[in-house]
Amino acid sequence: MKDAERLNIIIVGTGYVGLTTGLALGHLGHVVTCVDKDMAIVDKLERGISTIYEPGLEELLQETGDAVTFTENLLKYLPQADLVVIAVGTPSKLNGDTDLSYVEGVACEIGQAMDPASPLVIVNKSTVPIGTAQRVETVVKEELDKRGVSCSFSVASNPEFLREGAALHDTFYPDRIVVGSDDMQALNLLRQMYAPILEQTFTPPQAVPRPESYQLPALVTTSPTSAELIKYTANAFLAMKISFINEFASVADKVGADIVEVAKGIGLDKRIGPGFLKAGAGWGGSCFPKDVRSILFTGSQYKCEMQLVQAALEVNRRQRMVVIEKLQESLKVIRGSTVGVLGLAFKPNTDDIRESPAIDVIQELLDMGARVKAYDPVARERYEQTYPEQSIVYCATAEEAAQNSDAVILLTDWTEFGYLSWSEIGESMKKKIIIDGRNMLDGNELRSTGFIYSGIGR
Ligand code: UGA
Image 1 (cartoon, helix red, strand yellow):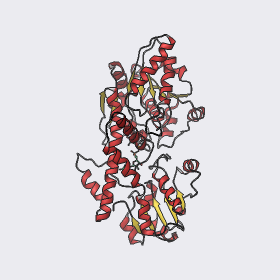
Image 2 (tube, protein in one colour):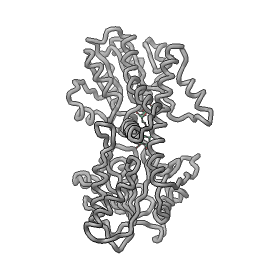
Image 3 (cartoon, protein in one colour):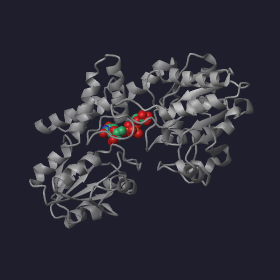
Image 4 (cartoon, protein in one colour):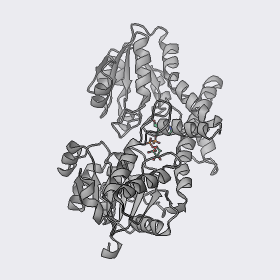
């Protein structure tokens, strides 16, 4: 990257979005400073140790070396920055609204320390409700007024579409980049920041090769409000797509159809597309549940009834219990039984357990009097710390979780579960019952080795 193209960028918040974006921008050649209030996180990152489990992230952290600085001191680095990217948490409040206190806290600090001599673009990358760009602008202005100074700055909205478990891939090879601002200079600066991705001129990091069929991404420039709404619309639509196929999985179960075939049959229609049509135990994670609740809250504030999004949420709530119903059908009596649970993370390749289907399923099993043995390749520690009240026997392998169990429920589609030797595992089980909550196993093969196999909608 030529010096003239290199930008000085501060990223505030080193969660999935902040850390991934910071390291990616550093790899592209920008001068990046990642800020986090938590000194323990800063210390660890400085030593090249990733604070989150995400494929390729630690390698990139070590590869980028000095290109990315980690600090807890935003004020020190602010005067040199061209852009500050806000990527802090935006948790749900109890009523579904979004807690913006972290975002506003950062806006306050920016207003308190901005240098009147250097113009600044503030970028909202956190998922934030409609109107937040405007709110950030107001907060910064208020702080500047208190100081009695005027600075040239603008706020842009730049929503993130990365998936956990594929965060680096989605950052380097996105389908599109969305930037919303009323200020042409801000849009130009963001275009410059993303130029190596838009034009794919960078050398791919070793851990994240460029897919052969990858085509250059589109840049969507729009207003801040439309950019904010694009994010919620995308997540609500994807959540609805999954709930839709899950609803049809229930019909497929009743009529004896195979939902995997049905999904293939409709997904080949370009208007529908094949993605996010995997029926299963339902969607979880830190994004879909929170964002769906948040847009429903926004809808209610603006007197827009959002029946489809509401239904997606309801279907998802019900979907979690489908595996329990299937277990009960095969096992008959659940009290006193032992059930092996495979997978605690909300999806594979992450140790994130937020709103994971496993939480509700395990709680229901315990409430019904079952003994639960659980295994997850990476999320066990986090689960044990977060849900100490759930009395679970944690196992070191999938085989151990299945041993002497009356049934196994698969809840996360970790690749390794596809390579298990089920005939051997079956020998160690009390009853050979499998509930495949992710439709990842070969039901016919399992049935031929004596298992009672139930998928979702198969
Ligand atoms: C989601 C979006 O996919 C990202 O585009 C977005 O940036 C992100 O939220 C966010 O807002 O930050 P993520 O939650 O990391 O990403 O994971 P997904 O791959 O979307 O999966 C979400 C849930 O849906 C998981 O529980 C997964 O198991 C489930 N799922 C996904 C299905 O049940 N079926 C499918 O076909 C796809």
